[in-house]
Length: 108
Image (cartoon, rainbow, N blue to C red; front, top):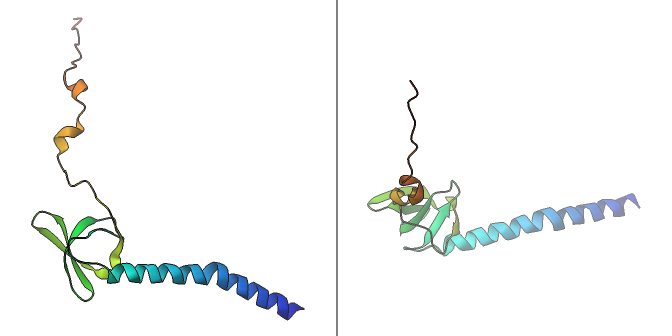
């Protein structure tokens, strides 16, 4: 009876831990095989960029105009549909607060 319980526990462990991890690894390998120039991706460290060149185990990732990073192909975690490439910080300031001034009266 104890042997049956042991086999049931091992089967449950395999079904709930090992199979999902294998499925995740196969999906990641398929992603890496499908990478091509121009794909928009994000790396495991959170860097967004467009693939400029794909070599065997290396990807050249363009993160800004004329700026490319050489990264390991395995560090690419996902393709993204589109990301904001507008780095214009001038629009980050609220326009309403620019026109407001606080007047301080001198009571001396």
